[in-house]
Length: 473
Image (cartoon, rainbow, N blue to C red; front, side):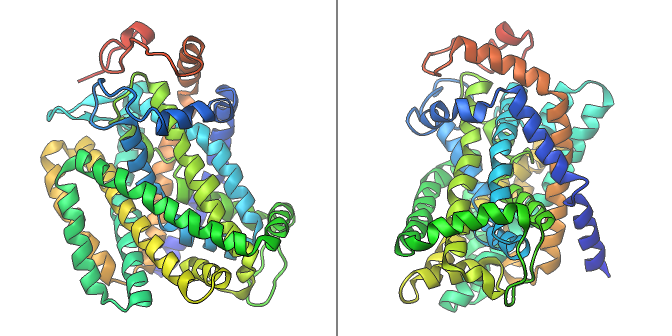
């Protein structure tokens, strides 16, 4: 009965009348207000993220542009990119991939906006560290008690989500992959993961950023290259796969074999829901680590953070989706990471496919644990102050062990609900603040359209020269 209640709540939150139209509508509105910034400034944003990696290194903050991006990617490039995509295709057909792409396109504007707000309204905590995100900017940017309500709502949902989708479900996926592929006892996996997590977390954001900035590029390149090999060996199926993705997005897919079948509404629902589950655009989570970046201006970090959604969905998710559709395994009735492994196994000779997916899943999931630990601790700080940050890190590491050794069917549904409850207050806040975001973005990009200049305005010292406001301490 409890599972049924949770499924009903999840169906409402992620259904066609609550989050999906709000996510899509907010992304569309911000895209229009910002003049399609995700198209106009994608090139400069990628250059700022990966070429000018030390831009703003002398500014106040805890990590570099690139480290903030890597930590956010660590939190988003996770199980959703392997299992979530497969689930969307299983439930919504190949057309779900199109809706994942479309939600990511508009989601890039939402990701830009929340990262902009995270830096714009960040603070210095009593340990001298930079802290920000929806739990702060919703209160500061929206007057009266409504902004405070939204910020507290977000903070509570984020802490809950950090133990679910950011912890137990990830460690459980690692344990399952290690057991199924290499025969390792889940309890051993849980102990190793818990200890490894604790060692990194006790070093704080700088330790997390150092690990993720080294791990994330390697794991993404490893997975993408393997996927490209599959597509190269099955190149004849690429054009038909694209044709089916685009046609099924508007027509649905009839039942084939063990596949449950879908209609257009299901393709839209599961495509958008799993797309957001993967790239987290609009959830507000990436704004938390963006706020810690050393940057000259909120616009610059907003653009860097925007590339996260592009990398996550337009590259990594696309690889998974195309492997599944190109090899035709989506018709055989499997779902989740099993379906993705089946696609790689079909496309590659021998047993390499399953091993590649297992290794990818292990690194994707563990990096997600590290990223979400930081999200959770910043919201614990918002609710209870810095005195509970260390106890939270210890508890988070312990929960990693239990996640690896438990059956988590209920936790997955609960995590979906918590994710949705995070997104609700953040999306409402972004809509309310869209005028401020658009106005200050337009002013900055008019002064520095190529992002090549060295603005004298710092986000923590002197931002009042541009905006008329001062960062709070």
